[in-house]
Length: 406
Image (cartoon, rainbow, N blue to C red; front, side, top):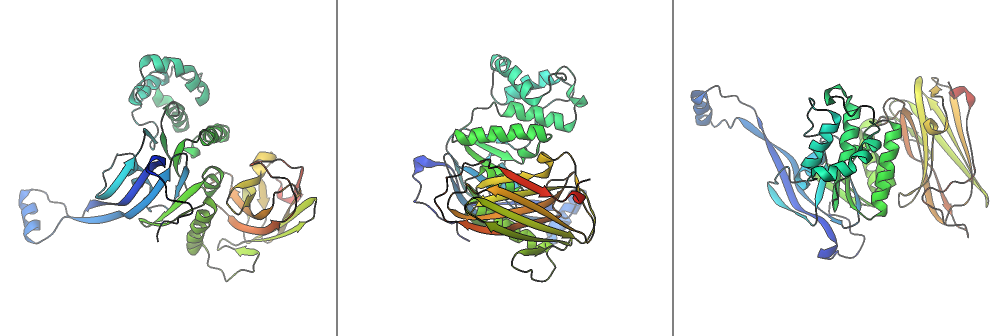
């Protein structure tokens, strides 16, 4: 499918990255030659000893300066290979990649760390690999340690750090690199919740500064929250380039083809093969928006969290509620019992079309879903209402019936 064009053609000066008809394949060994004799026999028999694995096929897209560009796709789609091509770690078999400006990849954080050195020594080592002088690292050192929240551990050897601590330190060093283009591979998943919030603030800062960022992720939440454009790759082919909302829908549809085995749902009901049914209803007045979501599971769900997001038709978030942020308790949904989430909001929405997304997520794995409904409710506002900020905070009243609270 051709790249979707939504604006006038970019001038060369506006282009940060251009990928033109890029393909990449790898050779996978199939025959092992134990010596020259066996290699000769294989050759005479026409046995290559390897097979071609075509990872990317004729990929083309353009990233303009100031874009926060998301790349999504299922496992094995070629995302990581594409990032390594963009970062000049790999060389394409065919095609061309043009980079205008200094590019810094955040692909494998911590590469170059020495486990036998202390955290302090590794800061200087990693800083040197990023092109900083000893004096420059010394000036940044306190900020790096404070951001990583590792003040008490910097004189310990890195081999005594947990994997999360190592990634936090590497990330805190990497963000000091002054680059025109940043390439990020799932770095938003590093650290605990508090550290992730710092990451969110940092990326919001990048977006405000109009930095060019390429983000590869499995999280549609992150794509909608940060990106202004996105691309989806499946089985090495680029299927579509468009708005975050459009790409998120295509991505979810691809996943649902594998996950859904139930019969066709009713318009506002989604039934997944894991047996969770969700029904949404919405009532709008001039001053209030009331949304009710009813949940019934075909199996017991323990230690769960609930997320509820309202977004514009463009994919931009305007309201988000998550139980793990608002409540100290995890939720439990008993098999075949009915539960209700009620949300009442002041109607301060701007004019436009909106959809609400609902999900029940395991507390220990936020990438997985018990259920995900992209359009649990849809509504349209036509009024003289106020223009909403990105994360406006209306007066809210959220109730999830007590029997779900452990």
